[in-house]
Length: 168
Image 1 (cartoon, rainbow, N blue to C red):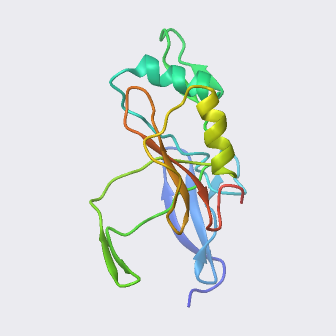
Image 2 (cartoon, one colour):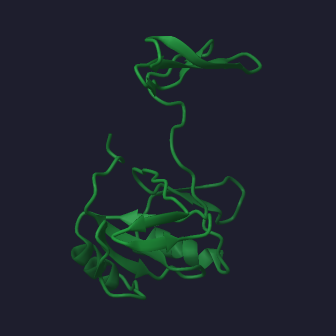
């Protein structure tokens, strides 16, 4: 068992000391010294990327159909960066067994959009012109459907049944 308040890791950058503190069996959020102190993790958000064959269409969909707020890279002529809302990250194994069935997947990253009421969200998006490649399906962990995004692959839209971490 780790001792209380024992430094876990300290790495000195050019003028900043980053350190974590082990409390019980967990590492408390990182602390930043010299340029200020963070009371929580130093990671402020997750930046996701969609690689699109038609970036203008993908950006228009996110801006006009999903109505996400955005900023534009100065001088970029349309290079929009979107605020996607609160986020969370789950880690899935590449091989697992559940209810007697083996599940295997290659290592990869995946983007899913979450909502509180999938049927209502899907209906609203369809009114705005969005299309879906699948019906609403109960996958056990939540209700899912696949949202078509112009210029790129479909993105899962789901209503989770599991505890969520995005609002911690």
